Each structure stands twice: as C-alpha cells, then as structure tokens.
Length: 113
Image (cartoon, rainbow, N blue to C red; front, top):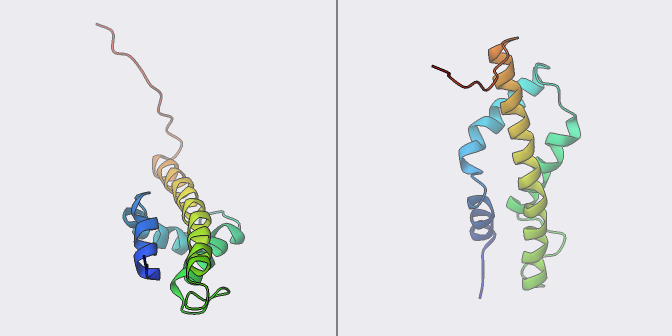
C-alpha cells in the first residue's frame, strides 16, 4: 500500500477541522506579527515548521529509501504539529472574542417568570 505525502497530509488534516481554521491561522499570524496578539514565537514557529517539513520534498528519512519509516516520520510530525497549531488558534479565537466584547462580562442566566 503506497501513500503519497499529499494523501497523508490530507488525511491528517481532515479529522480536526483544520481546513476551516486556515483563515484563522493567517489572521493569528498577522495579529502576532503586528504585536497585537501576545504569543510566544515558538508556539507558532514550531507547528509551521512541522507543516513545512511534511510538505517539502526534503526528508530526514527519505520515503523512497525507507518507504514505511519515511512515511511514519511525516505522520509523527503531523500528529504533533496540527494539534499544537489548533490549540494556538483556539486560544487566539478566545482572545479575539474577549477583545471584541471589551470589558463586557457574559454570564449564564436563567429567565424566571
């Protein structure tokens, strides 16, 4: 059974709603670069490097020499990079919502008649 990197990347990305969050990732990076969103550099750079590694044709363990192991290293990197990136995007979305609401506090309430 032979899998291409593109196929593996699509499969790994599909399960977490990653595609829906791509615009949010770009917005998060934009706010971070402008200094508006407080985030450690490593929290964005490492997941992005992981995704770039999987997409790039350069591999530490080449797929054509060690097919199974070569694919496994890509899957391992995806399994670490995507959840980290999604956690950071979720934190950003929470920050963005709080920023929009300003100092307004929202509490759950029950309507009593």
